[in-house]
Image (cartoon, rainbow, N blue to C red; front, side, top):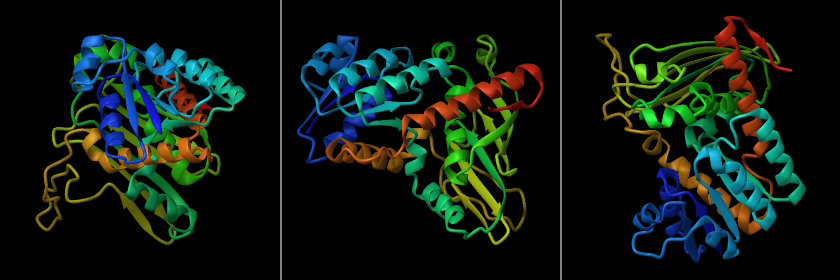
Length: 326
């Protein structure tokens, strides 16, 4: 099959490298708006524009362009009628996301959203423990999300803010792991160290409480910087068992208990390193979607629901009050 990748940033290059390893993908066309950057990314092959890549009639398209261009690129994929994998978010507003989903559905285009954590081995096992009753009645979920390094300043104004850019992954995990919907949201956020976020009305540290529709509480803590590396952990406490994903020899923690167990290896330097196997599995799933046209493993509705929760967090931070999702 022939696939097109729109966007030559880190995600576009990552997807291209993963697809290059597959025998069932005969050609990968990498396209961007900047010919010099595109030429450097494709390593010797002729660079393509987005229009050229789409005109080449690919069997599937990966949208890894800047968020501001996702809408036009998804609409172009709908016109082609080919499966699409879009990195999150589809758009930065609920209205725009809803409109894009409707466009894709009218065109009958299978679409997959880039929530790679759904393909992490540990997180999938954690979800299974909830689904099969291993943990029993779920008492609570706890999610920790810490970036290894703060974002460069030029990225912050167009990111949508910490809730929409970073925590959408955690909001998706809360729904996916629990199998429940979020009923209410309470969120707070502040700038503790990196003033670049304050200059753009954003935060670098958050604390969030979600209440699921069955009353289960979910707590989420996040920071834009962790001096020991990328840290993503999810803990489920239940009546029969307590299980955690993301706790390993490379988890960036240092214990101060004299008899404590401390991770022995170095921490992950980025999300790309922390979730490298998940990105590969996610890309494999998209190739299968292109080949078989089966159900999407991560449908666009997941992005819409995560964005609705993010918007509620922004409202809660602004008002200091809980927000009910309807």
